[in-house]
Figure (cartoon, one colour):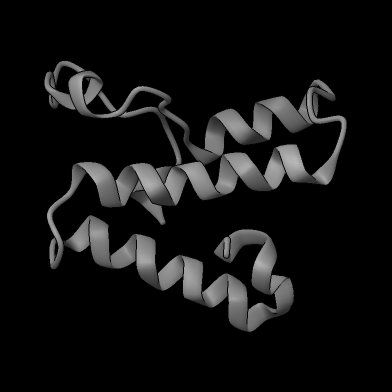
Length: 88
């Protein structure tokens, strides 16, 4: 899950902002939890889904990060959060 723990480095991936309009990462999610920004679980879950969606949007199918996004999202479903993190 390391690629998802911090914001994408725009110096390393300068075209990222052209592809992804709403960046999100687990570090940002943790900070939002710590300061009480999420008022409803759906807000938190939306940001978690956004991490995975952005990874699939920017990274080509079959790439390590794309595969990790799919694997982590499926893992969340198996762990019992099903529709929460998995979306539809």
